[in-house]
Image (cartoon, rainbow, N blue to C red; front, side):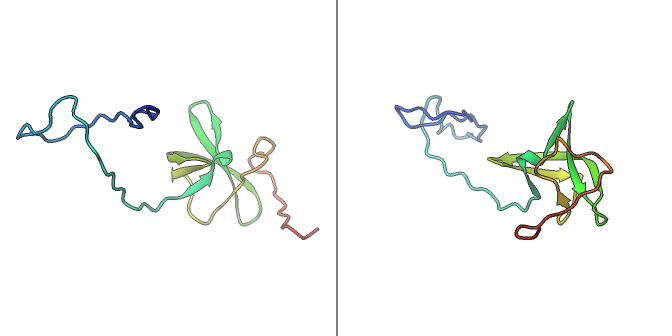
Length: 117
């Protein structure tokens, strides 16, 4: 699928492999296509929570004792501002999303809730 819409024709170029045993589809033809997507349940984290290092991706997780643990994760699909996590963390775990450049594995986190000082 092309990443740009042609501003004149308002079309997007897409290449697909389709069964065409009866030869009704010919090269250069235009089609109107409706794409159907299945609803997918996925674990998403904010994009800024991902810490890349070489060819690996990590997040910082806060355990029940407020200790930081650096975890390697496998990422999946992306959408603006969010990344799917396929493996490495579980739903419900607390992930650090801001200040990841200052966090260290094994460090302690003090959670400050808004309105409380």
